[in-house]
Image (cartoon, rainbow, N blue to C red):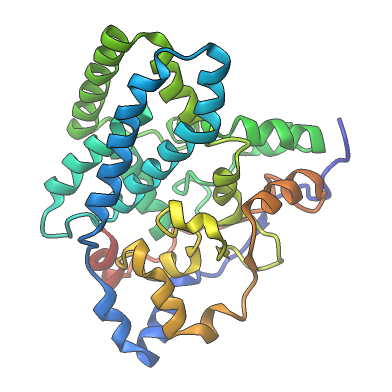
Length: 330
């Protein structure tokens, strides 16, 4: 099964998550960053172009062989669908139409969700905002692996399969660790998605549906764009729990690689996160960072010092007092 990981437990800390305090320090020194808060008027056009591209691909894929369908799903459709998942991430922070138009954000989330094949836009928002506010909380932050995952996938081969199975963990882990009753908009999201899927199958066939859903799942597993799942918070350097990536894949992922910047300022649209780094370089250039998501995947699988245990966890529930954060991210 390959080399066994060297860690036998998570990295436990009793300090608060680092982003609220760093946000305060940065704003004290660079108050002009507040001018970047808001929504990105270009975002809706970029995300819509991705959705329309996938709709156009329905006509291309239906006549392809199964081998070509799977190849297109991995190399093309999955990449676009992963980008649309990250569009839903932007939408979760109300960065499509702003905080003053929450329903417009939710409706656009339904639209961006369509090619993904699995209803996730509203459910993602429900859990993701808690990941920001309670980063590292052993129950509330469902981005954290469970003990079962860490114990089962603790060898080189095990970590390889864990990376491949990441989509399943992201789908089912929240339902097990921190289950919540479904919201009305989640049900609406599900009905719209199922209706779209039914129309796709009726008019284009199952082959096209496989292209959409399997592409989404493949691009969340052993795939270069999925490297951000691991690069963002797995502890590659002791004591550091959030990492940024400054490579070219940011161009197709709404700059999600600028992850320290995003957690520091969740009200700044992805397109403007590089400007945060430009304004306050001394806060970001001096901390560990990644330059390749592919390298992150390789190191995660082969390095015995890294694995599902390599996450910082907290017993406490983060910063309940951050009213400023509520204003910036909810």
